Length: 516
Image 1: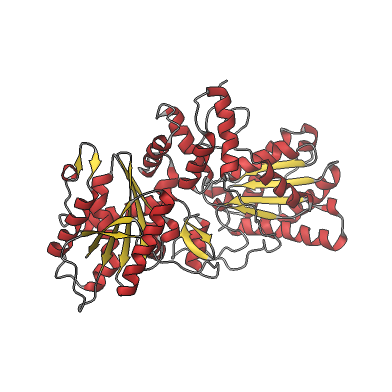
Image 2: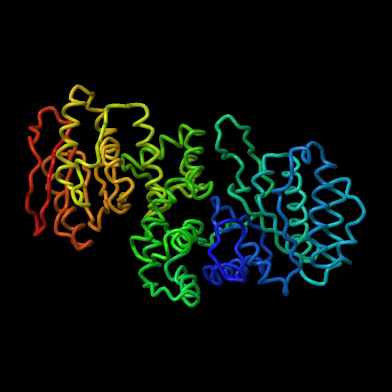
């Protein structure tokens, strides 16, 4: 059977093109060898199930591994203890049978209480001639239920007794839970009105610090295998770096770009092919990951405001898990830590957030911003100076009586709303993460084979205006461009606003400057 890229369910190296994760698995193996209990808590479609399956294949000779999932448990199974224990026992037996029918028979008598289960676990681990490892996938669906907490409490007690006695075979050698939420801390829930749990019995668990993102040197291992089979002639090093640029190594997004290029975009392994795949993902037609962004923002107004401040207004925050909003955003991998400050995790999520907020604004302000794409595109080329000129005119005509505080908060969103219908369908734009701060952000627009860099800046005085040109000129050098665009939003009443945009020279670069 021919291999393919896979973005649904667990990946199997016999069937799918996969990144070589052997270094990550070796790190996790150390956790297991040390007899640690831990949770692989990562965002949706971050490779948790695939990782558990890979560990099972890798370590089955060394350990007796019982890998189960709580995904199939229904609400009825949590109504009372005996129903839950019976279902848990059934799941265990079904999995153990795939390894040993004789050992599965050990569990044939019903377990009627958590005390019974504790004794069964003790006796079973003594019976098996290898250390027993328990893996439980999809724990999120259970962790708000008291019976699940009781199960964790039982495992915790056995772990503590093992620590006191020093008898490693008296319970599971290692227990691995996998889910989005960190089971050690059940305070954080997405909906503010949900019941909150404060005392997790899983405080014995070790922090899980393995980086599960795919870096370019790992992505290229998947491309090497694919290229051996398909001989496309792609520049593998360039493609792996370009995929990483847009995804920051988010496992699903990496595989989805590859899958789309292979199956939908005629194996166009180029910068253009990657951008087409990215645009397709942002549309939200590629699974539930992108759909979840809008759902999560709609369900939590505080999270929505927080992500708006980062995505649209360029705000940065100290990256600390003490802040519950940062903890939630990190849990969903919407943000990441960049030199101790918050940044949106990847460029695909960046565009998704911008799309969400611009569409939301357009729906609430229908008619204020009306743009005809053909006005700005001639023979497939984008006239960026004219785009900026017309945007300046729009602000003067439609928002001249608007409160300055509103414009300061919304100015960049208005520009994105103006630009989106011009670029959509043909081009692509994103905010360069390294240039984001409360007063400045660089927007990179790719259209018709050309690249445009637009610095969006809030007026902070003459000194900062000059600084903006310096920063833009330096950034243009890094991208090998000779021209750039500087759009400054000025809200000072005593400031004389430059009437028309104009080209200026700075450090050998041409900069089209507009003050709005």
